[in-house]
Image (cartoon, rainbow, N blue to C red; front, side, top):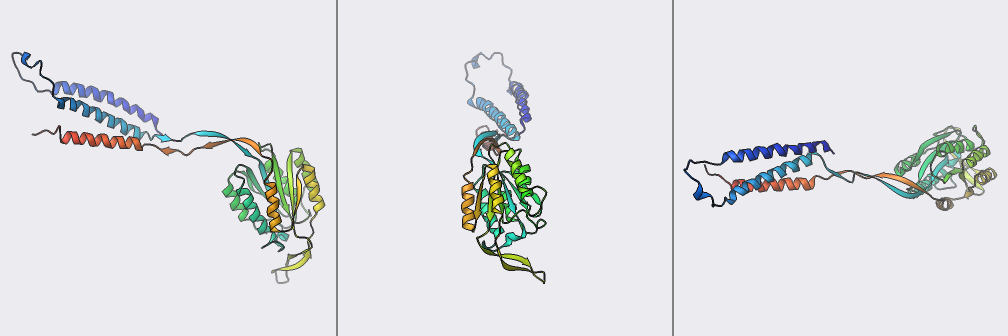
Length: 325
C-alpha cells in the first residue's frame, strides 16, 4: 500500500476553487438598463448539470488516487491456539539398513512410513537427524512438511561413514530439540543394530535426554531370525548373504526407560507402520502460532467506480451538454 498518496486528494480543493472562479466569469453578459424583468426567471437545469458533472469528475479523480494507493485486504497477523509437540526423527543410515527382510529394504520401508508420519503432524515442529558412523542434522526443527518429506525421500546409504553411532545420533537430536518451546519433546530413534562407534555412549545420551525431559521412542528394525544382509563382494559389487539379525534390544529398552519413552520391535513394514501410529498418539501441547494472511490488492471496486464516472461524464458532455459552434 502507498497511503502517502492520499495527500493528492487535497488537489480537489484548488480545483474546486478554480472551477467556482471560472464559472462566475464565464457567464455571458449584456448591458441593459435594468434586469428586474429577469429576476424571477428560473435557472436552466443544464447549468446545474454542469456542476454535477464537475463533481463527478472530482470523484473520478479521487477514485484514481485511491487506486494509485493500492488498497489491500487480508493484510494481518492472526494468532491461533493449536496443539503440537517437538519431535526429532533420528534415522540409522548404516549399510545394514539395506537388509532385505523389509520390502524393498529396511531403509526404504522406514522412509516410506516416516513420510506418512510427518504428513499427518502438521501442527508439530519436526527435525531430522541421520546417523551411521557419525551423526548429522539433515533438517533443523521446522513445520515445513514439504521440506521434511523431500529430505526424508532423498536419504541414501553412504551419506556418512559406515558404523552405528547410536549415542551420537541421540546427542545430535537432543541439541536440535532441547531449546524448543513445546512442553512435550520426543526423539524417535530408529536403528537396526547396536552401538559400535561414536563419541557419546547411548546410555549417557539417554541420561542427558532425561535431564531435558525429552522422551526417546526407540525402534529396533529387523525380523526375528535371519535376513539377507549386504556384503561387499570380491569384484566390488554388493552381494547379499543370509545372516543372523542382531539388535541390542537391551540397550534400546534402557534408553527408552531412562527417558520415560517406550521401546518397539519392528519385524516388518506393517508392524513399523503400527508402531508409528502408536507414537502418533503422543501427548500434545497447546502452542500459540502466528500466521500471516495473504495480502491481496483490493482496487477493483474503485476501478469500476472510476470507469462508470468517466463514462457518465462523457455521455453527458457529448449528448446533453454538447455545444454547437
